[in-house]
Image 1 (cartoon, rainbow, N blue to C red):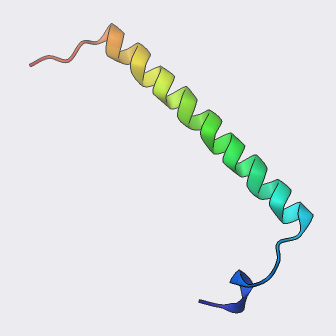
Image 2 (tube, rainbow, N blue to C red; image 1 turned 180 degrees about the vertical axis):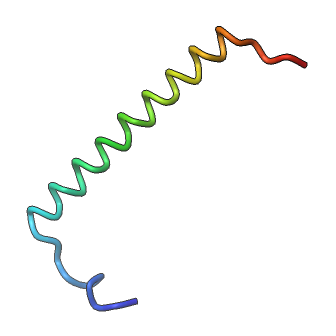
Amino acid sequence: MDGAVSKTPSPADLERERRLAEALRANLRKRKAQARETGIENPPKD
């Protein structure tokens, strides 16, 4: 590990991390919704 871990993040870094996490959560929700929709339209064939 390098010394960057012990450094206190700047407000800009914290804001970037928050926006990134928000975008990832939104993307995951969208993908889950898409998977549900396609699952309903295309039932699994056994």
